[in-house]
Image (cartoon, rainbow, N blue to C red; front, side):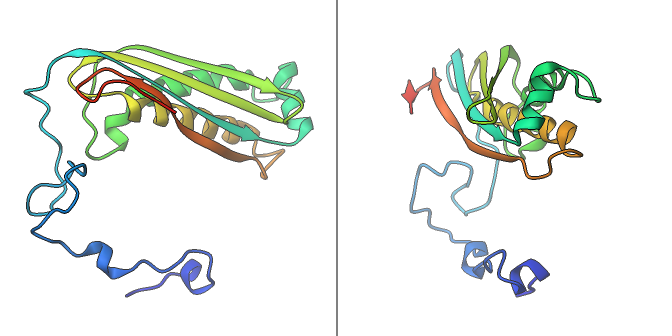
Length: 184
C-alpha cells in the first residue's frame, strides 16, 4: 500500500486495504448505496411516494475575539461576511448532488440559513433548514449548506485568523418519507 507523507508522519492513520475489498454478500441492508454485488450505485427512488421532506442541520465556527468583532461590526475589509456566507450556503444546498457522488438532484422548495454570532463563545453558529416535496430526503443538502457556509466564513477571514475551527456539524432533525421523523 502506498503511504503519503501525512501517513508516514503519523498525522493520518493508514487505510486498511480490507475496506476496499468487495464482497458479494451484504451484511447490513441499511447500506443501500451498494448493490447486491457490493458496487456503489445511486439508489432508485422512482417507486417512492412524493412527500414533504425537511432537514435541519447545524455547525459552529470558532475564532479569535477580534475576528468575530470585525464580522459583527461589519467592518471586515472583504465586506459583509455573514451575508456572503448565507448566500454560499443556499448555493451549496442547491448544488449538493454535484458534490456528493450518489446524491440525487432535488428541486428544493426552501433553504434558510441562519447565522448567530456568540461573543462569549467567540463563534458563529449556523442552522440550515432545507425543504422539498420529493421522493428522497434533504439531509445531505442541509449538511452541505452548513459546511459551505462555515467554510465561506473561514475563507473570508483566514488572512487575519487561520486558527478558526469548524465544530459540531450534524443533523438536528429530519422529517418525511418512509422512515418518518428523526430528532437528535
